[in-house]
Length: 164
Image 1 (cartoon, helix red, strand yellow):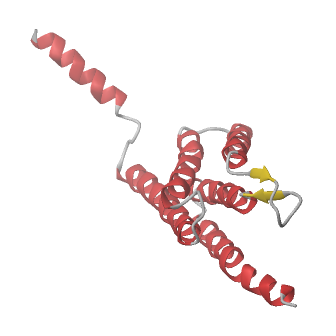
Image 2 (tube, rainbow, N blue to C red):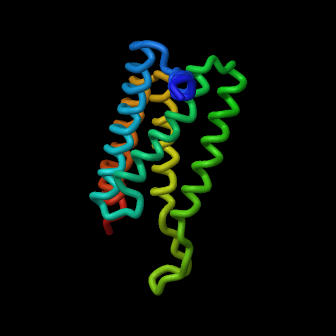
């Protein structure tokens, strides 16, 4: 029976050996935390404005996108393979974004479309997650700041020009 448990122990060690050293643990942790944090910032802004996709959704999208590129990159994937992974993430997030778009009719407008900004925000959040997952943290932070400007400042600017 001891030999059986020893074999189980060796199998568990092999299965959890994908993180080889402290550098890999630090890289993975940092990249996923940055993705989650930046996604959370954008999600907080959206949730604060009462939009459907909030903090948790944005955090999961950013971390998911980061993980999708992080794993193959750390496994030594070639550039063309990474390109296909990124394409898959972009296409996949499109389906998630499409679920947030509602088209209808209202009394004020003949056709009313809602959720486009939320869908675009989720798409941007995935891109930020990809950047963080690839180790481009500065690009991810700068992109988050610019997205916040679009979410927060642009409605005010547009409001100034739309006033009668």
